[in-house]
Each structure stands twice: as structure tokens, then as C-alpha cells.
Image 1 (cartoon, rainbow, N blue to C red):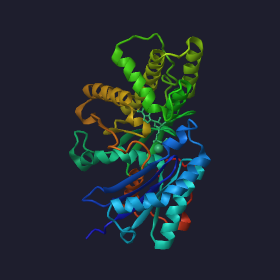
Image 2 (image 1 turned 90 degrees about the vertical axis):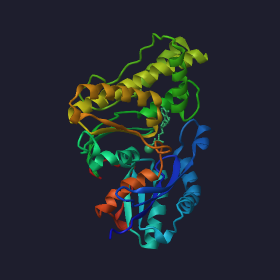
Image 3 (image 1 turned 30 degrees about the vertical axis):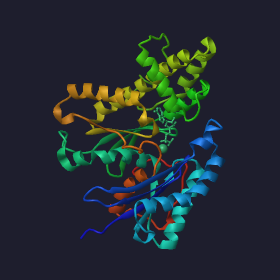
Image 4 (image 1 turned 45 degrees about the vertical axis):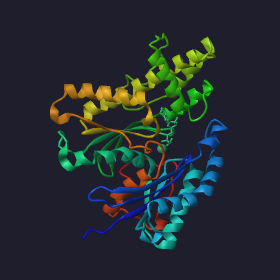
Length: 364
Ligand code: KG4
Ligand code: ZN
């Protein structure tokens, strides 16, 4: 009989303290609990994450959040078989809090530790929805690769997932992340923190009003024959527009948010579909905090439908989004990614693992 796996996963790489319990299911793992304690209110006061403040808040919440994850899952610590934890990338002071809690539990309970790359976790938050197709039910034969666009406050990357735990980074941002650009534009327009949802809301108001705009923000790197992104120039273009014509009225803010969001979505979707044409993935995963953006979801959906109507049936792509509460940082995604490492015996002793704030996703 297959041995039961019950993973306690911990994530503290940025400004959410999170813990989750994942159990082996029939074939794919099941999420028993997914607890997130957000620091958003704390960072709203400063208009962004202050690393020192974030790590202090993690220290206060990490034990209660772990306890809540266990009690919600109706699981005792004695039932846990593995501890999974985010080992990077992220803010070093934040990462260390979850990491040390995981190491202490692993040491005191003599449990194996599974260090997980945060981006790998984000990818699994949506890739878990590909389980049916990966079990050979898709027109595309249910085979890897999957293409993953991970867009959050800290990262923007296109990854080719060639198999569980086999990753090829096709491109990354060379400066700001997509979510960071949303947050900076929100700050410029005095819209509060985190900025993504608010910018998106104002852009939607503009779209619904059927007004027209003459603002055409740049599409950085869109024509470059690579899969890298750049968003800092776009933020500067917004600043120039605000200085030139001001942005005092709600109507002007809506117009600027709309033009900005269109530019971001155009760049992300164009590069993603270009990669799809080259690598012919069975599906696209959209993950990370910015995956909650409706305009990005719709833009990708529209282009995938067009792509699917143009390619042979065997090349048609599915589209996977994170489930409810799974697009922002959470620990269930870390536990899901860890499950495949555990199946492969890729586990560590607590003294063998290291935290790395710049950890890259190379066959991790
Ligand atoms: O994945 P996440 O929770 O944390 C990081 O790993 O960074 O992503 C947070 C980011 C923030 O920059 C936030 O503004 C952005 O995701 N975000 C959005 C939306 N919801 C959250 N950006 C655009 N549209 C949204 N609806
Ligand atoms: Zn994240």
C-alpha cells in the first residue's frame, strides 16, 4: 500500500504569513487547510512593504498561523510526515522567519524538510487544475510541457514546465515586476496599497464608460525576439503623462489606469503567445498575485481562443488559473509543489537546507 503523505507547508517570503496542510489523495494531493495572515493593513500605512516591519509581523504570526492550519485540517502535528517551506526568492528577513520555524519543527520532530522555490509554488497553484489533462484526457495527449506566466509583486517570468520539477526559465523581467508596476502607478495616482486591484477597478470603469483615449503608453520589449519583460519605463511614461496633463480628477485617473493596464496586458499576452507558438505547450498557467487581474485573464483567454482556432487540434492549449484564494501568496501552493518532490524522494535533512533570497528556478 502507498504510504500516506501529510505535508505541513510554511510560506513567509514577503508580506503574508501562511501555513497549509496537504495530504496525498488518489493521485493528486488534497488541500486540507490554507491559512493566510495578511500584513496588507500594516504596509498600507507606508504605501509598500517595509522589510523590517514584515519580518517582525511574521515572527508574531507564524506560530498561530501554523496552529490554525493544523486545527483547520483536523490534523495533529504527530500526523505530519514532511515539512515544506519556501526557501526563496523573497525578502531575506521574511524568508528566514518561516524557514527557521520549519527547521525547528523538522529538528524537534525528526521530520524531513522540503525546500521549495516560491515561483514553483505559484505555478502549482494553477497547475493543480491541469490534473485531468495530465491524466491523459486532453486533446493535446495530456502531455507536458505546460507554459507558466508568473506575475506578482516580486516576479514576472515565463517558464516552460517540462515535467514535474523540470523547469526552463524562458524569460524574466529585467527591472520591475508587473505587480510592482501596478503598485507604483497606484502610488503615483494616490490610490493606496496594494495598487493592483484599485488600478484594475478604475481601468474597468473607463472600459465600461466606452470613452476613448489618446494615451498610448509604450510596450517595452514587445518586439524583441526574447521572452524578457521590462516595466520600469512604463511607470516612467505614466509619471510623464501625470506631470504633463495632471491626474487630479477621477476621470483622468481612470483613463490613465486603462491605458496602463492595456499596455501591461498587451506585452504579457504577446510574449506568452509567442512562446506558445514556439514550444506548443498543452496548457498555459497564469499564476501570481497579478493573475487575479480580469483584463489579463480575458486578454489571454481571447488570444488562446484565436491560437486554438489556428493550430491543429493536437496543439490546442488549455488555460489554467489559480483556484479561489490561491493567486496571492499562500502556503497550499508550496505544499502542492512539495508533494512531487516527496514522491521523488527529493527531501532534505534540516541541516542540509539553505535559504536564498535570489533563488532561481532551475530544475529545483
Ligand atoms: O503573489 P503576490 O501576492 O505577492 C508576491 O509574491 O509579490 O502578488 C502581489 C501583487 C501586488 O503587486 C498586487 O498589486 C498585485 O499582485 N495584484 C494585482 C491584482 N491583485 C493583486 N495586480 C493587478 N490586478 C489585480 N487585480
Ligand atoms: Zn508570490
